[in-house]
Length: 154
Image (tube, rainbow, N blue to C red; front, top):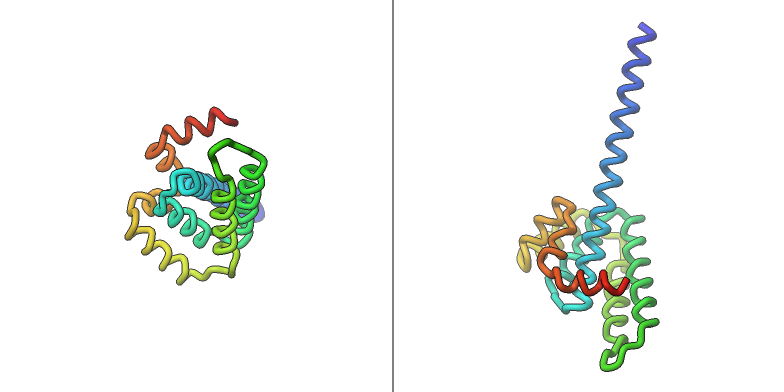
């Protein structure tokens, strides 16, 4: 009897660990989706990519959402350090700061995330499908030149 209880507990521990790992991988892919959506929106001014980033933030848990806001502030700081002739970095920085404020304005409810998903579906159903799958590759597939250029800068 004791052996079977130990076996059941061991199986439950393994299942719990697998679930936690899967959730962590999913959260990492949502973060990557968010980062790539922000990149497309900031550098190519694609509003559907902004909607994708905002939707990703609204479906994220509170801690994950806070890390997204921190990322936006960090990206704004990095852009501010780059001085390029004929480019007004302030435009990019303002966009990032405004998005950070919009995301961080409050804790989003499930209703908010459902409404945001509907807005994303209306402007770009492919982006919603990719978000549901936690697949950030949609952006690099749609805009490969942008990501190649950025990769060359890093």
